[in-house]
Length: 248
Ligand SMILES: NC(=O)c1ccc[n+]([C@@H]2O[C@H](COP(=O)([O-])OP(=O)(O)OC[C@H]3O[C@@H](n4cnc5c(N)ncnc54)[C@H](OP(=O)(O)O)[C@@H]3O)[C@@H](O)[C@H]2O)c1
Image (cartoon, rainbow, N blue to C red; front, side, top):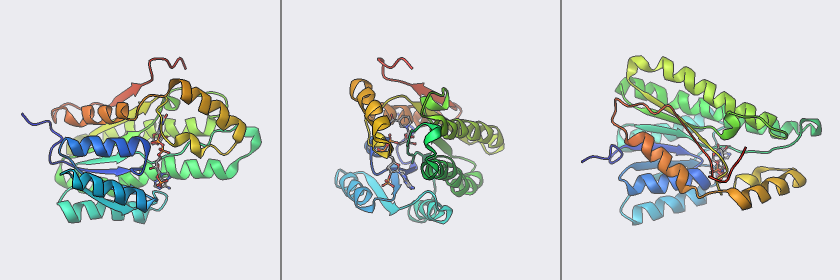
């Protein structure tokens, strides 16, 4: 019986570490062809080598999601090499938490550029192909912070709320083309994300919370696989998950 993952061409942004890397490995094991984008070319090239050596199919292309031309080039490369794009996983992101009165305007701009505009550029690149194919699946990584706002995370939370709003608008618009859309909103997962926090005191607080609570990135990979593996007439629109120990 088909798992509805095997043979699919899946483009993943933010594939060089954490959730994107885990999703790439898991989907490749299930027979997907994975196309990996991130800025750290050495990381995604090595990941592609490992996946291909294990009998999977992977292609890596250095991509900065703040540049729409680079995101387009990533998707175009997937289609040129493998003939189609079945899933676009817009996952690249960063989380430079800080109180607003510290006026970390560069951090605000970076997270808006990556977390919101990067997702929009991924949609812009994949959508024309998927509409022509009359099939496809766009998965966007939001967060628990896309549901709740707290101290120090106003801007990050705003970006992740934006991802959910954009995804819901997209969901409604792509009905005529038979496309599927999924928002995945994780709680604390052990990745390199905390490294993107530039304020040392804020970072220390989040790090200790993650040290106590964060779960394996495989949790995210399984959610992605679950959404993709459903029969084509089943559209999993949102998955919100947390470590069992996470209260907020
Ligand atoms: N871990 C969690 O607890 C958690 C919870 C909720 C939501 N999330 C979300 O999950 C997503 C993945 O984060 P993660 O936890 O896996 O953290 P991570 O290990 O730091 O991974 C972040 C990924 O985003 C990529 N990235 C950052 N800026 C980029 C840019 N300009 N262009 C292309 N790629 C870029 C990084 O690659 P390069 O640096 O190589 O470019 C890296 O592959 C993010 O959207 C994050 O907000 C994570």
